[in-house]
Every structure is written in structure tokens, then in C-alpha cells.
Image 1: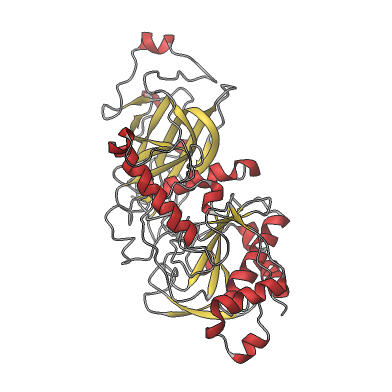
Image 2: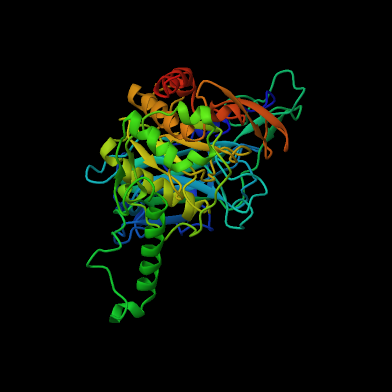
Amino acid sequence: MRGFLASSIGVTCAAALALPLTPPAVASTARPALSAEAATRAETVAGPAVRRGDAESYVPGSTQSMPLAPLTPLARDRVVGAPAIEGLSPRDVRHFSLVGVVWDDPDAELHGRVQVRTRAVGTGTWSGWQDVETHNDDHSADLGSAERTSGRVRGSTAPLWVGESDAVEVRVTAQATAEAGSEEGARVPGSGDPTPSDGTAVVSPLPAGLRLELVDPGEAAPAPDDPAAPRPGSLQSETAETAEALGAAAADTAASAANAELAPLGVAQIPALGRAESERELLALRGNELTQAQRAKPYIGPRPRIVTRRGWGANEGWRERRFVYTRKVKAAFVHHTATGSKYWCSQVPSLIRGIYRYHVKSMGWRDIGYNFLVDKCGNIYEGRAGGMAKPVLGAHTLGFNTNSMGIAVLGSYGSRKPTGAAVRAVARLTAWKLGLYGANPRGKTYLKSAGGNLYRKGKNVRLNVISGHRDGYSTACPGRQLYRKLGAARAAAARYQGR
């Protein structure tokens, strides 16, 4: 979500906005286009004809991955040197609720605009065009880490939550930029301005291998002791599906056992504790590491209620089995997911399952990237597996994942203000988790950069103990409105700790 581009970057090509509502033809690399007669027979919703033949029977908990192809504008709109446009014309698909675009090279950047429109299940109503946040590589594992160099990782946009849908249209338009030193900046071919003769307009190529990812979160994974689940020794146990289910059950037990110091196995949430109980928990968990002064006066906030991975329905068979830890938690980075804020809090388990599936299946990460997630109703959710009280290594802030944790507030907060409940939840969570490691929410700390676009690798960087993503990387995340609330979150977290 890199929001701040260099001053030499020009405006996004206005040609994308000038595209006709009638969908352009799709190149031969995509599914073949319908004939004019067939298109006439196809169902029409909100204008464009929807192509049949792409929809299959509904499969809950799945990802549809569709290659994008060049879109050919109408003859009258063709301009020599105009930015490349790839996408898909309107088409029926299996049900999905979350959408994103991925590409082959995780180090390649998509300089351009990604827009989607979707058709709601039930009403048959098409949405307007919605922008998908294009810069997502700054939410990732550190450069050179085993997770980043696994060979499975792809470049990606942020995922966008659209609600249950059964048809989609997408267009990706390359960005026209201005060469450094140009006095007038770029004039975009096809935008109504004459094609520049001085060569100042430069069109960034789109990354190779663009694919549309349509994610259906499915239902919550069944509990390992579900009586309907296959058992070893049955006829079903010979199947690959049963082997996978048994492996997922073992992984589910391991994820739950990582929190055994906090709650019994298999619970859907860990309950809130009072201050005195939280202080006793701190002494039980880390008492031998505390100084005498810390044991006498442990600054820790009351433990908040947190929904476990079991509680939001994680399929533990998707992630890598082993847990990876850092040494401690010195700082918390606050993010927004840029998934949009049009969700009901009752939908949040599905939304998180969608993000989890997108991170693992589409982007190639080892697990969901964030350590915790917070919804607009103030509920807190366990993110990456390994134990909520432990220093689990996440993939959330490129360059600063070591000795930190990532908290993602579900939604987009560039122009929309976060709810007071969400800000208080961030404060409660940081007061407890940072308190386990002796960190003052209103203090400063040093983290060593693993490399990024603000700080070179190896540089010790002084940061707020509660920082926004943009403090460690040049990005718009966590959105201007949420970033403005971090001072209030720091002050509240310190009060919760008794400081």
C-alpha cells in the first residue's frame, strides 16, 4: 500500500475513467469471446452482457484464479502510446466475497489503477466501479527471510471485501508518469490532451502474470473432534482428503496448544482478565525474566477478550506447520487492511478467513501476515499462529517484522474515521501484549531495519513503541484518519498499564 510516490510520478491515466461501459473484447489469451448473437442472448444486468460458461456449482471455501488479458478499446478510442489495459469482461463466476489481483514477481510493483465491479448474490445488482489498493508488498515478510524467498510468494494488491457475489468485471490500467525534469509533467495520451512530442510521458508496464483472485471464505473449519469427520481405519481414511483432514486436525491442535498457558485447548476465545489477574499471569509467564522492580510493579494492562483462530474458523491445514518466533516484542505497528469498511461485524470471521486464504493461497505466505486483527466493533482476533502471548514473527511491516507485532484494523481509513471502539481495542491489546515485554506504549524504542524504502538494511531506527505502518515504510497505511488516532491509543494504553 505504498501511498507516497516520488514527485516525478504523474497522475493516473484518465483513459481508465473514459472507458465505455460496454465491455471491450478480450484478447485470445483469455476465454474466447461470445459471438454477437450469443452476446445478445446473454443475460444483461446494469448494461453490459454477462458471459456465460464461467460459472460452476458453488464450492464453499475456494479460490477462483483467472488470468487477465489485454483489453482492446473501441477503434475511436485507440491512441498510439496509450497505457496498457488488462482485465476481464463481465462474466458469471462461482460465489465469492473477496477479490484481489496477483502477479508473478513479488518485487515488481504495479504502477496503475485496479478497478472491479461485482454483482450481488440474491439482488442481481451490480456495484459501481471500486478501486483496489494496488500497493501491498510493504505488508510482507522481510527481504531475504525464508518466507520471502520460498519461491511461492507473489506480488499482489490488497484484498477488497465485496460481499457475496456471483459475477465480476475488472480492469487494470497502467499509469502514465512524467520523466524527472519535465516542467509541465506528463500529459496522458487518450485523456483529451494532445500526445506530447517532447517524450515526457512514460507509461509504466504492467507486471507479468496478472491474475484475478476471487476468494470464497467458506464455512468455519470443523473441530478435530467433529463426529462427522473421517477416522483412521475407515474406508474413507484411505483417501487423500482424509489424510489432509487428519493433518489439518493435528495442525489445529498445535495452534490451540500454543495458547495453552492462557486457556484450555479448543476454546473459541480467551476471556478478559482483570488487572490483578493479568499481573499474576505476567509473573507466571515471564517472572524469571523480570527485574525486582518489575515484579514489584508490573506495568501491564488487563488482558482483553480475544477470539482465537478456532473462533474465527481458521483451516489450519492451509498454513505451514511450524511456528517461527522472534526474541521479544518491542513495538507494535498499526495497519489497516484496505479491504473497505462495508462489512457487518457478524461477517468478520468470514472476512478474516478470506484474508487468510488470500495471504496463503494467492500470495504464497506461510500464514496470515498480521499477529492480531481488530474490527470496527472493537473485537480482537488472533492472527498468525504460534501463541498470542509469544513473540510470533509476522509478515506485516517490510523491514521491521523482527521484535515487533502487527495489528490490522479491518477496513480502509484514508478518508473514513475509525470507530472509537476500534481505537480502544488497539489500546487494550497493546497495553496487555506490550506489557508482557515491559514496553511503555508512550515510549520510544530502537529496531534494526531489514531493508526497505525508508531505511537501509542494518540501520537502527528510533520509533514510537506504538507506530503506524508508515513510520517504518513509505506507505499510506494505516490511512490518514487511523494514523491521527495513534496518539490517543498510546495515551489510553499507558493508562491501562497504570502509568
